[in-house]
Length: 259
Image (cartoon, rainbow, N blue to C red; front, top):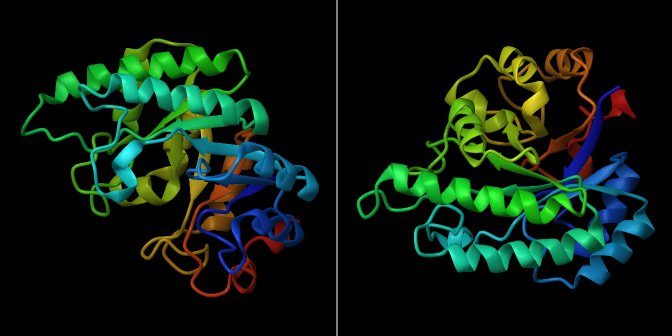
């Protein structure tokens, strides 16, 4: 039976963030994921997680100015020290929250200023650094590909590019975060790609397309897809990372068959 986590940075926003843990648990989710939790003390997040009885599926390592339109840290030449500080912070939050994965966002370094190969070298070095630092906590590090329609200029936009990035880093504690929404836009062929690379996928996220809303609002046949992923032996969480089309709790018909 598939296991589902809720991205509480995007879902249950009717509640303040710490209350979203309880709301997600009450809705039937077994885990939460948070994009960037670093403006809330780790102890407060740990208490909310424990009170709700949830696990943590994934947290992003801080990407610096990426959220405000900047290039981010992970692949940006000259920002290696900033990324190391982000990894130190990730270790602090990882020790408190014990997530299964911590994810690196490659960002969009300006390729009119730096060669793509140079940015990929920076990314692989930073990924190896994070993988080593978090391995001692038993936390896997992932790297994610993102569609270039929503995020023009993003460095990694296909599964093969994400796999090549972790290959270049060469650390056993690395995998990819496979986002069904992004990869449906970029390449389709979801079931084949997931099953062919399952041993290299650390976490799976999903949203329907177009719109990035809940399953059933777009073109993806999620019951078929979830069954195929489960039949292929996926043991991790399936992360609901979508923008609810209304009140979160009113759009969870897709989840009920799995509770």
